[in-house]
Image (cartoon, rainbow, N blue to C red; front, side, top):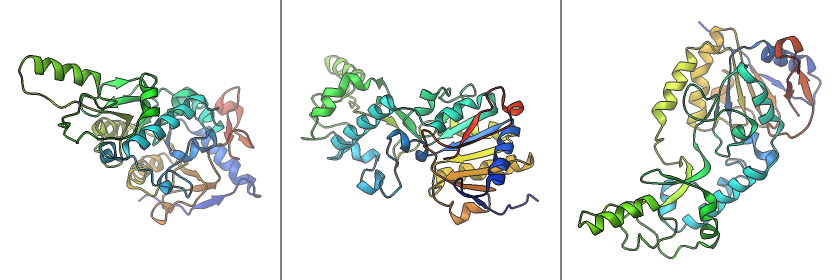
Length: 320
């Protein structure tokens, strides 16, 4: 039977330097690290989170599939474009740089974030065994058609989005009579629509463009691929689980945490949680160390792991 550790709280600004060194030693000795990253690792880069008191949800912004077919669409497109622009222009946080510096020690980072800062830092991002960072909720790198999933560059539609206001909106099945004149309709669907109309064939709906992220109320189109990656990683003997910048308040990251606890324990590995707020009670018993600290830092104090374990640079662990 696997032991249930007592949660140890570690405050970097406090006197517990020996516990920070214990964490550094665990990281330096690990060979296959699995990471779970949340929005908290990006806030210092100017990217808003979702669930904090100042997050997008608190302002009533919900990226739901239904919202792209009603009066909320214009606002959400503009917010998504703003986040995309911030992500493109921002300075990387030390956390992102540090994750990338782990190199081959990082088996996989499962990120809830859609800002693609992990890719900007150098992680190979995508779905498949060759990628070391999996975007669990897609990304805002492109616009995509909600029907055929064709990808489009934001820049091609920037002026349309910035000037866009809802005067009428397509229905979810795409059968609005004005579908060909609505802004941000899919070019590929439009070509198909016109060709079928000219041929006297049954008309098919025209898709509308939206951010390429997975919406809150949407079934993940690549959920089975992600599940296969998780199953494979559990069988790869991961020996450390690092949970960064997520509140663990929703089912997705909770389930991911629970799936990796047993494989990591089999390797006598540690579960390390870094976040400003305490993990919820139903997760606390699964975690060895709670480092009570923000994770999106740009500069700050570091605890260096032994050089012989991490290479000549002795990768710094950002803690402050």
